[in-house]
Length: 66
Ligand code: HEM
Image 1 (tube, protein in one colour):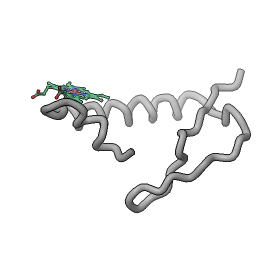
Image 2 (image 1 turned 180 degrees about the vertical axis):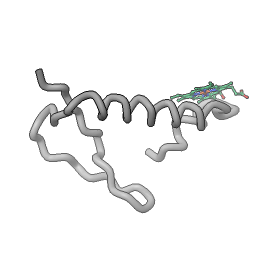
Image 3 (image 1 turned 90 degrees about the vertical axis):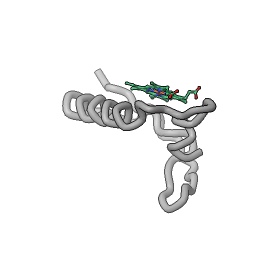
Image 4 (image 1 turned 45 degrees about the vertical axis):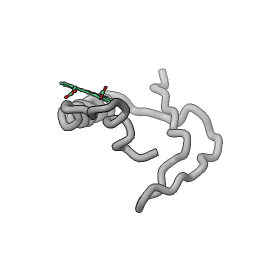
């Protein structure tokens, strides 16, 4: 599932795509600068090939350890 899928689900597409992507980067940067994340489990991650890159097929769940 490529990233453009989410923005073009309806008949028209999303005019806020660039802003939403920018906001997501800010949220991610804020979380990473404030917390030390750890893997939620040690299960092997299935690779999913995209056009060029390979990503975890089912994402990678993270937790904020106490
Ligand atoms: C994760 C965030 C977002 C997703 C997944 C998303 C997804 C979508 C999708 C699929 C549509 C098309 C709906 C349709 O054709 O029926 C849409 C339309 C729209 N989105 Fe987003 N959107 C997001 C964030 C935003 C943001 C941040 C804004 C503005 C600040 C925004 C403004 C709009 C507008 C104005 C439309 C209507 C465009 C039109 O019909 O001409 N969206 N969005």
